[in-house]
Image (cartoon, rainbow, N blue to C red; front, side):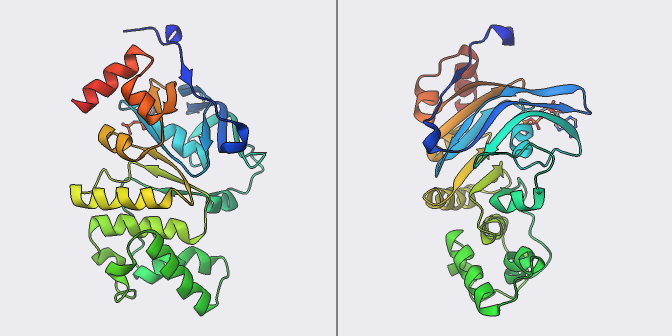
Amino acid sequence: MQDINEVKTHIKNFDPNDEILSTKNLSVFYGGTIQKLFNASLQFKKNSITALIGGSGSGKSTFLRSINRMNDKVAKITGEIWYHGLDINKSDINVYELRKNIGMVFQKPNPFPKSIRENIIYALKANGQKDKGQLDQIVEESLRAAALWDEVKDNLDKSALALSGGQQQRLCIARALAVKPEVILLDEPASALDPVSTSKLEDTLKQLRSDYTMIMVTHNMQQASRISDYTAFFHLGHVLEYDKTENIFTNPQGKITEDYIRGSFG
Ligand SMILES: Nc1ncnc2c1ncn2[C@@H]1O[C@H](COP(=O)(O)OP(=O)(O)OP(=O)(O)O)[C@@H](O)[C@H]1O
């Protein structure tokens, strides 16, 4: 095996005007001392989809979860996360407000055991929003954006748990959209879905790209190559390559990346 320190990293840099979010030397230590992410410095371009790929345990979710401060209770996180000129890795950031701007969708669909409508407006109501007309409008807008409206518009007061897995995942995306985030983090959002639902979810994400910036962990190389604009390759907690997706898949710079992509595609 190649020594990680001998592997040259190939990281694309954007014009700062194009970026919406970036990390600088982001490192994560579980239990305070066990380092699992090493100096990840990545820039994310506005209105694009970035795929985070790499083998099991390579640090993809660790990186993703650290961005909206979901690892705070289990790990020490050093380095910087820049969002609108603010280092959001600083402890005095209001994490609740942060997550309205940087939303997250998880691997398994996790709707609340409530109606479809209530799932969408739950956070807004908790935030004091009461105007029924406005809430109804947000329900429709969010479900339309998540490409679920036509399928559920006559059943908004039925339980979200009665939806199929694929519909539940699109509902979770609609729920994330309802608070109007700029960035959506997706941790293997299609891994629990069948191929038809996966394809619908991918279409939804492609449509959302014009308005949102998405960062998505995926084990599915075909999916990464189909829908992402940029791809970052993680290996043993290091980001080894980061570039346009077509460059990563057609002309990877490192042997480790090439082996991983070839193996995973095969
Ligand atoms: N809460 C935690 N406490 C301790 N160690 C953790 C924790 N979460 C993750 N790890 C460890 O950090 C390393 C990276 O895990 P992570 O889940 O980020 O990898 P991944 O690339 O997302 O993997 P996978 O593709 O299998 O989901 C692994 O060794 C994992 O065991």
